[in-house]
Length: 372
Image 1 (cartoon, rainbow, N blue to C red):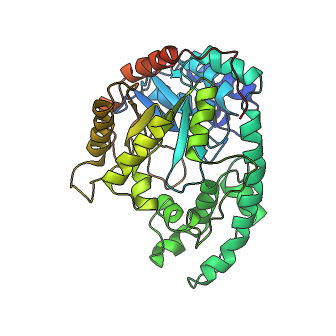
Image 2 (image 1 turned 30 degrees about the horizontal axis):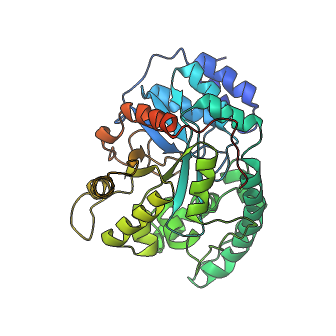
Image 3 (image 1 turned 135 degrees about the horizontal axis):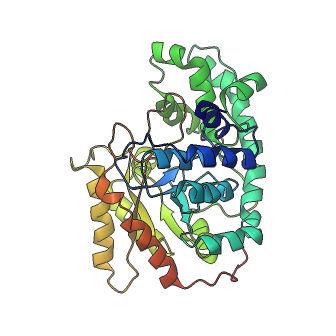
């Protein structure tokens, strides 16, 4: 079998995990590799949420870019983590298990990092995540079907005929519609040229921001029988022995219109409740409209400001992330961001060591699983 065939199998959602990992063993012999901007990328997605490639395929990407570590933070699920961990041993890329939870606030998504892989695998074996992940999974199915039903009416108002059929789902996304991002992918794949020609969207990310994530367009707030607040997720991740982090804080400016002073107050509130890190550097970070600085610099200053103002508190760490999904037309790249806009100083392997030391410092025994 050729390398081309193995490259197909490793990202095949219809192949078994065993088949994908077997392909990984052959692909690990490749020598044609480049160098990413960052040594690590702590925020990307697989096809277990709204990504396009498999967990093994994401680790393979990191291998090809000579990266040392990555975290796959699929939305609300940990389904692909075991495959990613095993692929990491094949490609000699460290995989830090992770997850990213939507919350009941539009601008806040909370990540969970588990640098102690053995501890994470114990939690997995005990099905410790199920009381949180399963109710969300069921609630999301109801939410997403209702959002699909809104497509025709929403775009009729914009003078465009549009719908998403079951055939579209099978054609454009893998593993079905499991997140809101999948709806954006399908719409852009099916109607992208028409949307661009009508100046309704410029790419899949722009479509998601304008339509999929807005309550007055396609979005329907998630309703589950558990607390979906940011603080609730922070506490759950801490109870699991993980490290909760704030993903892409620039979304708070775009979706909740927070200024830097308000963002700092929010960071303080989340840190008081157990937040351990902030995604300081990400592809979304452009120029801050408030002060004219790079948003990466602004978020790093806010992190340091908190640490200096609270010397008795455990300091907040930083993380980075491309938020790469491999979605068609997305324009993102693992370890690089968009057009290599990730900052290498925030993507060094030393940060993995810092996260691991933080988890040890917090001293959460693996057998401790509290009720959620």
